Image (cartoon, rainbow, N blue to C red; front, side):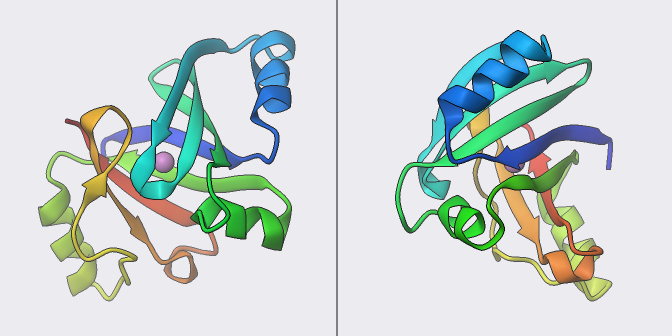
Length: 132
Ligand code: CO
């Protein structure tokens, strides 16, 4: 695990949340990007070597839509950057961690990502990313 790549916050109203993080908290805004595979629209903020991502659903069956219905928004996941995502997946599987997808899926900016079961990491959803 090289560093925290990003922290994701689930929001129902992306416009309103953007105003707070960009204009009130004064974070450097990096624009929006849709991640079709996750059915989400992300709004990206640069914070040093890491990013903060506001994530909102683009469809009712998006995982973020389910999260908003259940928890009403808030911290959704923490993402760690790795060099070799397949090697790390095997390593974690060998240690008994459950992975939510068996192969890496496309993430923001041509990256590949995998999610770990939150019950295996103290209740927080963990994402691993290998940069594209
Ligand atoms: Co993420």
